Structures are given as C-alpha cells and as structure tokens.
Amino acid sequence: MKLRTTKKEIKENAFNILAVGYCELESLLKYESPFAYSAGVYGWSCDYYQFDGVVISTGYSPIGSRTDYQETRDVNEKASHLHDRSELRELIGDFVKNQINR
Image (tube, rainbow, N blue to C red; front, top):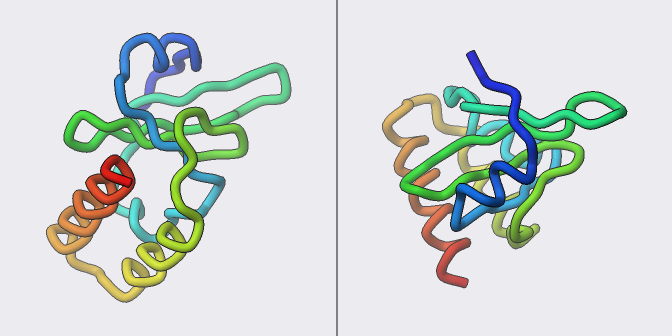
C-alpha cells in the first residue's frame, strides 16, 4: 500500500531525489513497489521509490534532479532482459550511484 503525500513533504525529507519521466524505468522497477505517491488537481502526478537513501520520483510530473536520458533508456533496456529480482536490484543500485555521482 502506498501513501499519499505532497511533493513539498518529499522535498523536505529527502536529500537526494531523482526525477524520471512516466514509464522511463518501467522494466527496471517492475518488481518494486512505491512507498508513496503525489496527486494534484488533475490527478496522479508521480510515485516515489526509495533505494539506499535516494528517492526516485517517476510519473507525469516528477520532482528532483533529472536523470540522464540516454543512461536511463539504456538501463531500462538492459533491465527488460532480466527477470531475476536480485539482478534487477543490483542494476537499480548501480543506476542510482551513477546518477548521484554525475
């Protein structure tokens, strides 16, 4: 079950937030569950996932630092060929580290 929250609350409580567009990490996050979501006057805005102290915001209106488009696309393509949760979790960790360190 994910909780409804505001973008303001996420910004106040998370140091590192990565913004990813809708479905850009669909394959990478297929086995993960968001801990929260935000909605605005037009409905759902984004979901929030947390990995190693970093929040990934993904949706129509995500918040945070934009991820590198090509790297995001490449990692999602690589994830589409993986079906083992531990391999995907490792790939998520690598992706988050690369985005934070760029």
